[in-house]
View (tube, rainbow, N blue to C red):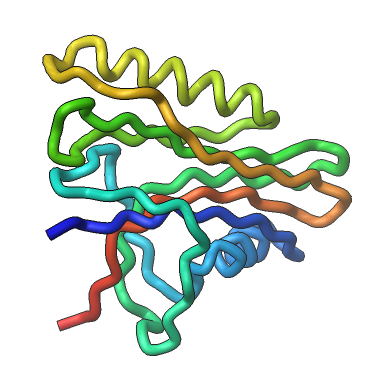
Length: 159
């Protein structure tokens, strides 16, 4: 059975840095969860879907397993950018690699994603396909802002 990994993104503005981060989580559709950050491995039988996640009101406080990149900026005129890139095995079973990066421009984040994934596949014996990525950004106009991209694996309740 395929595991769906949802790639979502959001931006937000708040009175504080944490307020901006929370607003970006809400914009991405993943607010009200307890985030459990994963490393960069895409498990076998995975399918990546790029779409906005949907906040599930009945999952308030659940654990949410995800890979994410977030950049917070509070200096007026500065940009905050975040992105996630990935590669999948060319002739495989859906497994692959993520990398997440933050920066102050889309070009900076895109370059970091490409450089990192190119490096990560060099010493692995499998053959990987093209590098793909999702980025988002926002300009600070006075209040703190946050750009966030997340690869959401699954939500899980508490036992």
